[in-house]
Amino acid sequence: MNKPEYGNDPHRWRVTISHVDPDAVYRSIRALNGFRSWEDPPRTLYQLATTTLEVVRDTGTWTLLINGASTDCVQDTVARLGYQPDDVKPHPLPELAGLPEQVQRARLRNAGAA
Image 1: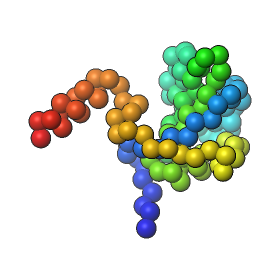
Image 2 (image 1 turned 30 degrees about the vertical axis):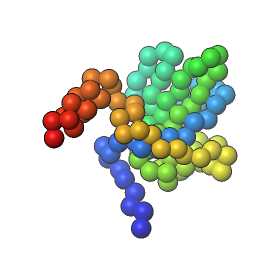
Image 3 (image 1 turned 45 degrees about the horizontal axis):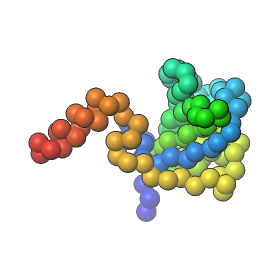
Image 4 (image 1 turned 90 degrees about the horizontal axis):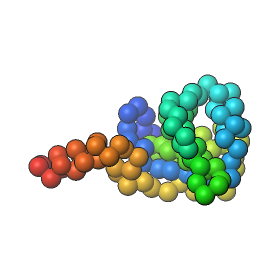
């Protein structure tokens, strides 16, 4: 049985949706009681339920990255935002992806000491 993971569990799955309107994404997240957690152009982070969303500008287009602890969490967020879950497939993330560089180095250092 697939146990859902919540809380501070690392985000292991990601969906990428290209060519999004960042203002429309913001309005959708706010309508679902999500919030902006960090902004540093060209990247903005949002929290919605058990997922972290990133809106990033890359080569002239805006891309939405939805990160979650399980494929179900990610697909649920895709659907709640009005995108078609069948059109995007979650892909696994490396364990340390998305962590600040200092945290990555510390975890790798600690893993080597074990």
